[in-house]
Image (cartoon, rainbow, N blue to C red; front, side):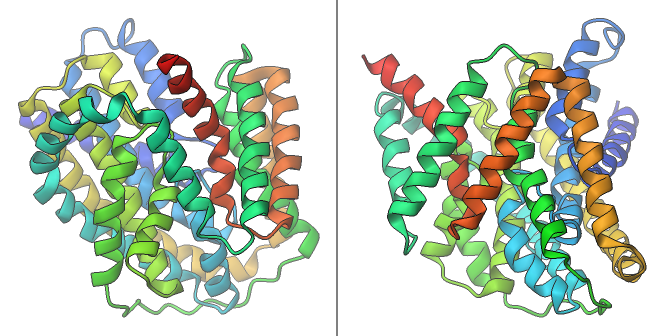
Length: 397
């Protein structure tokens, strides 16, 4: 069994590398497909091998996904905050350093996750019942706390509300994979269109390893990540802002904080599944569909898988980022951005159809407008938070 788990882990690492490098291909999509196949094509495969594959893919994707986020400006929802500080370093010829800052935070977070998993599982199981009845107020307070970190608070509130209304319309539609065109437009294609318009020129990149201090970023990630792994509708973007508010750091430290936060939120989503039987990420939801209730022995297997995939992914990220840094100057950036947009449109049409394409256009225009207002892009996560808050408000009523 150990050999099979290791093989599943290595295949997951390969899959996560592909999903991480290709913008628009999210692990949630792969997880959804895998869940469908698990009842038919993969019905004879031991579920532990499938969930090992999903966990390793998720962790690898979380490491690798920063490469297109920083070099292309086409982020996933978990990496969208890295675009601004990452692009600043990219334009200074330090794109390699920017990605490695996130990877450095990620690899340290792997070991922190191993250490904290079971203690946090105990805490989650004890306090969830108390918080669940007040979930609407907790999410509302957290949302306003994030808005109050802005100087332009009314503008941030406007962005939060307008994206929330868009999210309500999309999530109440009957299209397949509604989050794909919604989030791709808000955080991906909108950034690409703006980069084409601004005619960004990428200078030659230096291959220098980061030397920043990691204590503050890790402290911020450790404090904020459990909240977002525990509460529905909150993602690692919000956790990073909360973490930075608690443990102030510079732009390089912030990149490390995002890298650490993404890994912790992903890992702790499996802990949340074990402790309270609730899923907070697509990967955890796929695992729940395949195996149902997560036992402590299965969680222990996942922890080992996460440790192995995290270490391998760190070195994969290092080599792939070096390759991209050496080749980016030779590539027509505008052409690459256009090609990426075409690829995203193709993915949306394939998974969500023509209505998904119309949602992609609407969310892209919304993203461009909200980006022009010069507040943090994470406020556009109102597209998920407002529907979630309304769900809990109706549950209270």
